[in-house]
Length: 390
Image (cartoon, rainbow, N blue to C red; front, side, top):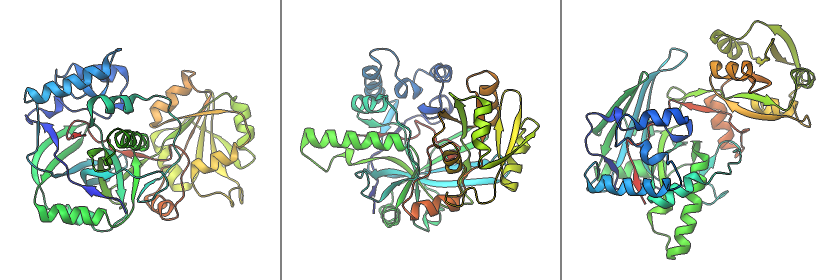
């Protein structure tokens, strides 16, 4: 089972204007988004987390050191956990209150168990996060882990000491410090009693594994801070989690070719262009939607077509298009998907349904992997509320 330990957290010293200092994670920011956050404050975390230029990584390291020297960032007096709460109303109108804890999650070897991936990852050639970790010697953004141990939510019910609050786009982000030794032990023991499933941050966890191995080689030690990585761990329970779909964008294949391939396993019926209500109807009635530039089709699985395939939309599409030349990328959000098709960046798109929390848990327990980009956990955690020095 994975180790989960407190650490001496690095935080912004002034908390009265955190909105100008923190930001969404780097991998959801466009260049324009990143620049807008830079302009919010000379100390916005994006100035460190999203390097620019040939000396960007060195500049990030310099800024991190300078901000600590100037008192912009300060370190807790002792190792702590940080409760992180997200309060919001999801796209379906359900009020949600996620409670998780930020700590150091053990970095385990691939396949060793304890910390489990929940989907196959797409390859990334960039070494950006690894280079940034080497330069700053810090974990800047947490991965999101789901604890399979029951009772974590109850352990986090009692508030800790409030150290930050941000409200952004209808989401309240609260961080509370936990320094009581008995409570720290209880949280660590519970999370360490069962597997943790990586919900978001598979690549960052992989980078932490590479960095850990580099530190081991350089120092000959296995007791440094690189043995863990910054993680937000919440309980895998349906009433807390908001899981959105990541839809599929297709190129390298015509709409007619795509429709012909899909028709071997789906009944395709032309319908009106999709609206937000279409997504709810898809979940209620169990169909997918193919979006072309000039037409839209409802895709209903033929009887028996997927008897040998797990009941996951992503797995169905992989099976239906097996052996058919095409390229696929991934996009969440209905407006973004339809815009990509109409702008010509994709030949067509297929809207899929969100994966249920029950299916996520079943997949984990059976040690199976979902197709790439099967889930999109919302809302995204803020970067900058807590940093972890290495």
